[in-house]
Image 1 (tube, chains in turn purple, yellow):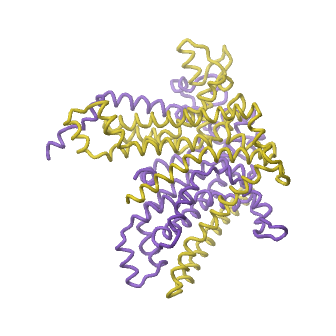
Image 2: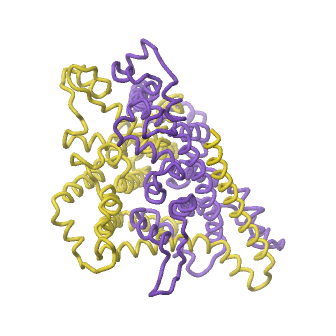
Image 3: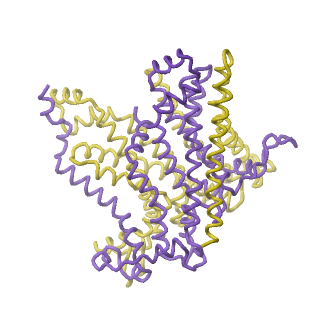
Length: 306
Length: 326
């Protein structure tokens, strides 16, 4: 068996390892350069951005933090009078509940679908799975109408006007709804693979479903739940469509990503605020990504590779 | 500053209150329902665990989707029937034809290119030492929003008039190679492909990571056995490795199609759908929220849905197959 260790995988003879390294690193550099360009640009003064390409600036460093100060706290221009800080806070305020709510609700549903068998549970699971690919666009308008006007049959209200449109709750709820199909599917894969003996032993000991869920399923499903939570966090932070539809573009509720999108369209906001604003927006997802990458990858794999 | 504090504190309070109420409700439900004994305990547990998700899915996805289909046969304000008018508008309107062509280009070019590049990198990564650094750098753009990615590429595609310093990477490279830089976002049909690059840039890492995992999962003895039979190089890849990762490759392709269909942020941020770059998802948004025509917007959403249906059916079939084996 020791020969096995010594024999290199023959499929690897397709090309030499040096060739592979050159290709991989070349593409990696190409892939990384655009982000580096934005990062360098965001530290340049307005005059420098237009007068000198960013890779030239690297040779003649002359950098400033003024862009960040201006974008964060406001630079007096009409589009950025108070800066992006309020929007940044809105993003946090939107993202936390919009991550916690669907993850908790999906964990409960996934447990029921995996471990409380009932007639039609298979069909229900397939239906939820199928909902994953339904475009959000299919539900935007009716959902917005539901939030503003409720639902009626004739004159009888079957669903009250919630009055949450344009408030934070009006963004949490659609994000929660839209996240559920993928979340339930991913967590179902995870929770269904927990050992059956463990569940049965607990039931024999007299534990009911609530106790089994709390004492056995939750602790064991933590890796899956963490992966999903990271995924959902990035999704909500980076979302534009739901934000544009359900949050008015105001400082009161709009997230930073939609503020950034609106800066692009405005003349005069300039390259300084655009580059620094973009970097502020992507900084949080990048930190989350690099620090929790392992869990994130595990979650992706649970969902797509069997 | 005090102004800032007086608006920020209530925002955070609302988050904590909302989360606290949410968990309080769940704890209360668990406590009450946990007391139910005997025959009723199972249906009660089932309801508590499943009902919140089902109510949200029905109210948020199923019923709205049905209403969108209904709206697509109605006028802009959804208060009178117009039959198939919104659909025949789509068939006739030359602007919509451009949108359809672009959308089809997106769903063909983007998935194929993304999946092919992802597979190439996954195979090569398997071959090198210290793969974790390039892997995470290639995967990184996935954490960046489409809006952020668009701004990153706005600087790459930046064009200045002749005589001025070219500060965009693309213009500079073209200039360096002896070509004439142009206003890239205005040059049809190149601009659509430049927008696709942004999408591919963000999403390729996803395919690479899952394909790389699939390649590592190919059992070593199968590869060795066929190597003993004389297979090597390209033949080994084609006959052994690729068939083993084919299902993952199809997952990457399908994810690419669904994602490319829904692409909206990139087009909206880069060109606003102008200069013949518009796609279905962006047009749907502008019909509803700029033109205030819910009828046409809904009809476009229905077309979007019809385009994903084959993938939906395929997904269900393969999940079924997998479950019968399990």
